[in-house]
Length: 253
Ligand SMILES: O=C(O)CCC(=O)CC(=O)O
Image (cartoon, rainbow, N blue to C red; front, side, top):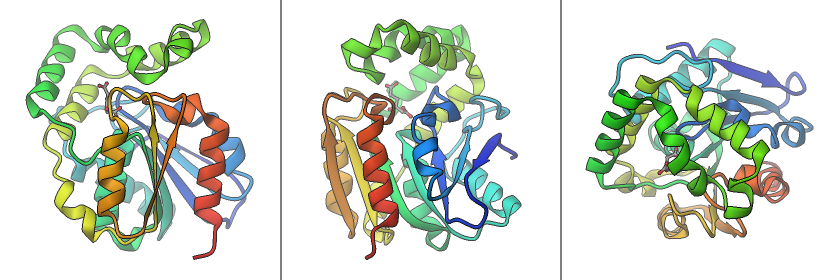
């Protein structure tokens, strides 16, 4: 499946792939690209059914979402890259680091989880969105994505609410089903990529306990908890996240 992407930064520099969360698109990373592109080629893409990537009838699996990334890397002739993902993007990153370790250099997992049940909640949400569209998710999502000060700000509502309302209903639902069926916990111990795990202290969707669980199970992991930050911590705390990502992707081991 061909996904929409954007590649920014100096030719020949190491590549950092940026993977978006459920209901967002590649512009989720607007505050990261200028900082990362000083040192890296930044490859951001839209998860299927999000932004300008076409949706296909769901359900999807993390294997399929990860296959989209591998196909993109193959198309661009990129053998190995650093990878950063928010939530669903982080789940995609964990799947890749376990199953295609030769393609993942260092991993950064932002506000994500290896076990985000109950599955029935994700299936119910998929059904709701197939019936009512993604616009029905805007009101319940924004207070999870941002702490109260930001969640009500006009520009934030316009950008992130607009992104979510524009997501393809089938694409969003298919991604919900990928989360419902995900099976990442047992594989965490097989991840060998040096891993930075970032949590938002005020994230109600993937609270810091989920990040602690990942950091405890991955052999070479480091945990950072940011505050104030909810689920889209990279958008709420861009300077802190940029500093952590640059440090993680450049430090010598
Ligand atoms: O909308 C939510 O409840 C959070 C969604 C989630 O955790 C998956 C994602 O943001 O990619």
